Image (tube, protein in one colour):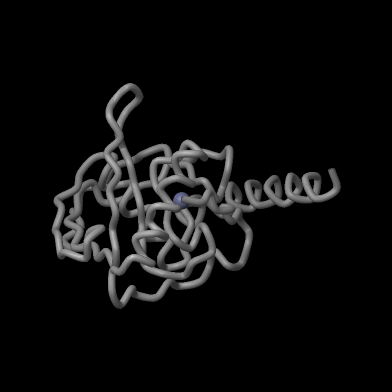
Length: 172
Ligand code: ZN
C-alpha cells in the first residue's frame, strides 16, 4: 500500500467530474487500499479518489470513533436516493481544505446505492454524520467542495489563506 499525495484547494484538478468505474477489479481494490491508508495517515474520516488525483467515482470512509475498531467502508459509483426534506447542520472539514471547518446544511437522511469492495451492489440508509459524510464525499465526485456551500465571503477568505500557505510552503 502506498500513501498518496492529497490535492489541496484551489487545485483545479479537484473540480473535475469523476467517471464511473466499469469493473471493480484488483486495480480498483489496490487504489481503494491506498486511499484508505492515505486517509488514515491524514487522520481523515472520508476520502474521494479525485483527492488523490484519480478521477473515478470511488469513496472510502471510516467513521469509527477513537478507541473503536476500524470500520472501513468503500463506495464505488455511489448514487444518493431519496434525500430527506429535513436537514442537518454539521461542522465540516476536508483533507483538501486543511485546517478549516464550517457549518454546512444538508439533507439529514438519504439512501445510498453503490458497489462495495467486491463489486457487489449494496444499499445503505444513512443518517446523522454518516449521511453528511457521504454527501460531502459525493460532492467531490462532481467537483464540488464543502466551501461551495458557505458564503462567498467566507469561501474567498479560506481560499486566500490556503494560497498564501501554499506560496510559503513552496518557498520554504
Ligand atoms: Zn472533502
